[in-house]
Image (tube, rainbow, N blue to C red; front, side, top):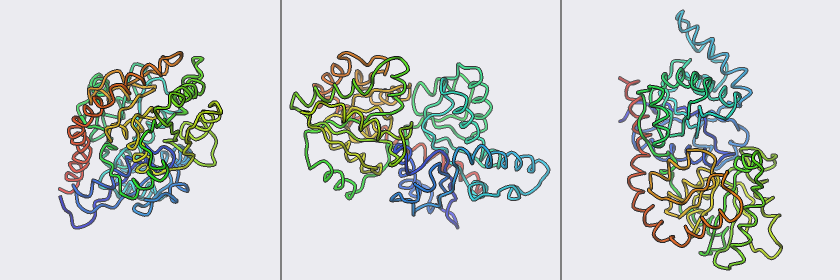
Length: 414
């Protein structure tokens, strides 16, 4: 599909900094959408405008501030006024007083890159954020594609009420897996297509691969461990010491001498305190808890998502608590043990038909992690071959995201 001008694409819920899973989805969109729809102009509404401006690929897009505070107190109220103005036929640009709102108003299509949304148990502030973010372009009369993500469950009454009323107004929802599809079917929604995660189609350059090899000392005996502050917090709520479990695991693996452990943060905000978007502090705490004799490399750096994928792809086995660290392992056919907190992990592993690779955070303790790791390591070649066989199908499913965006753009131009 070609047009006389670049297609205007605005994105929500994605950023270059912080969570590099989010960045990997932005990278994938930049890499692949123009090949399907022709030239594109990308406007990225980001929660980290200053930090994003310093990231390697920020120059390819127009960045607009959409911090949570700005969203709640400026962007959303103005969008509500714009929606009221539309009813009485006032131009919506009268209310678009920020560059973020103007970018949305001018967009041919808006892509929502949230990794997970409208999920029970995440609290009222997060639900409110989900409602405002997804509603923002809808209030301005723009069509929205929710790129492949986990949604639901919707058992909590307030979440179910909000999700049903917002999600039915989305043009297309890309469902990331079987369980998300079941949750959405329970809401009676028909605007749903199945699509694997967008990040499966992110490209890794030769420069990124070389950068990773240099960081790793060109070793091939690697176990890469990618912890998560989110999982650490979930563990602490039920009395499990995640840091102790992970450090004891790394100590034992290193002592056996078969693998060289590497710790890396898949979500990083240098200079900021520990948060759900910053795994650097928990990585440091795990590293500091290792016994002195343990030889473990800590990659204490803010690495781009393509370099992180190359680091993960260089490993023999990966242990990941971040969702998109797991995606990068699967995308590089690297066997992975997952310590997760949501159905979003399992439904992606299901697409590859691999079993016995995930550990719910509730199960951590004792020898559970080592037992699961030993099993996966012993079946490394078998699991790698199984992942490799499934990858073409998964990547084609990931392309459904771009097809959904193209279909919406086509309707706008008819």
